[in-house]
Length: 384
Image 1: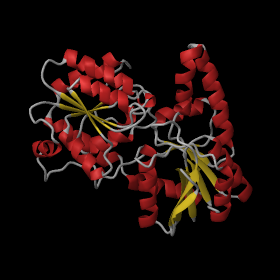
Image 2: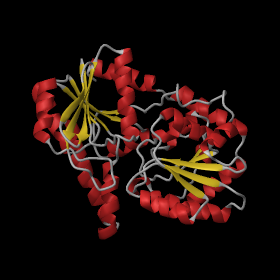
Image 3: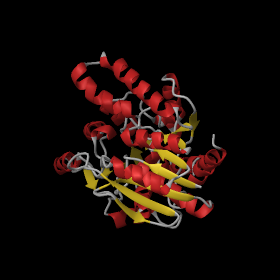
Image 4: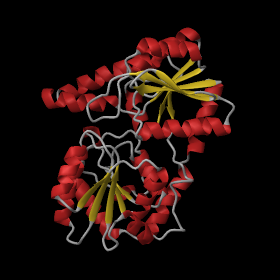
């Protein structure tokens, strides 16, 4: 069986969707007899890899000057690739125009079409619309988005959703055949490191050993609430009287704003995107607390990576990330910079060594890519 994953939410630098796709390719290659075809945007249309696991890029422009994401526009070539490769399974990782083309192709050819709801796209629409139209537009945006998604998914086999929170949202919109499929983590990389001393890791990374380290890992962009995190750093400094250091690892369209902030506020450092997962695991091992400011997340894969390494987390309650939290009671109920800062400072004061073991055990027992893809392959194979 040939399985095709098609998505526009793909950056060569990294991100949750890229992690999902790479882990899926590895699972298919090492645990199944199936073939895997990945179609993602690129600067030109070309085949990059062959064999059982192929990669095609389809030409498209950058979303903006600083983004590594592209908008797949060469739809004739995309259609030619689908006809040439003829996959039996097509999974779209976003709900946009390429997904609609792939769905129509799959229905004509008798292939099974699925979606994976990686990104809650109405939130992006709302952030823009509410700036100009006010809160009255919220219901209108959600109705339009729900109608569109329901139409797109209605003629497919199912929609994979990472969290039960989003399943409830989509079910309320009338989207059918929703399949709960939590993401996983590479537990061979993101696990407690008993062979290295945490202070030794800090010295290797150039971090101080005499104060708490607060860590953020992710893209610097509006949809990741980077501006809210910058405001939170200031309020943490007002609330916590002892020394501390904030570290922001990543890149994105707000990189300049982050670097400017760090220049004027030396309690925060910016570290460029870390490519090697083993190097990233060292940062998780070195830190005392992971901060996730996102109010729009559909899953929060970074939470699993951090907790897998034994790093406690703080984020906002009431969203799709709740299910991935080993220490949800310590999270903020107020989705503001002040609410996040208060939760972080409170957590800093109550951290215990055993919290790291609890976080790692939570991930080890509940999340792995083997569990995710073992379940997904059974769904593919049974056609349900």
